[in-house]
Length: 222
Image (tube, rainbow, N blue to C red; front, side, top):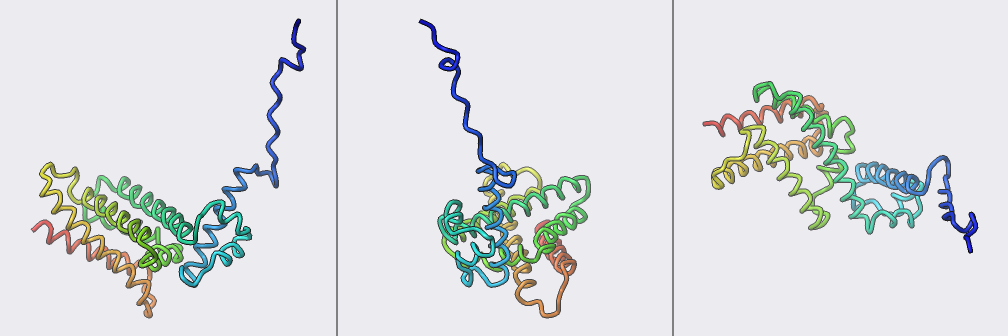
């Protein structure tokens, strides 16, 4: 007894339904982008605490079910947004450092700092969300902020001194100086955001950051 051709062939996979040219996965990714875009706008305009999930959904034109498909809570949405902004900043400064690798540190530092400033100031909402809102939201967000600072400190230490020192105590001291420097830089950014009645430009912020980092570097080398 032989099997018929129709029985031998596997059933064709059901066609993926497309709406406006997008399949289900693409529509889901689009909704996530819309939610993060809405969160960026609202957190920057009216703060994390002053924004509700319902407002994010309304601004994004996404239902609350769509929100919870991607995020467990408003905090989870903020965390995802902070991760996205951080990745963009890290990419910008890493690319700037690579492009300026042949320059001496004083010139290279200016290029890297300018890239950092433009990454957060070209769209001022990003600076407000990442530097103006992150403090005090939750222990998980604070942990993420600390991780971001430590990444920045390791990056700065590598730009300053190259490969890690094989002496663990010497390397610990190097990283401590870099971490304190990053803290000072981030405080200058926060002050620029919150106490800027004079309308200081992004270029002025970059100049202040370059002056500060170079002053620390002089002391570090002494």
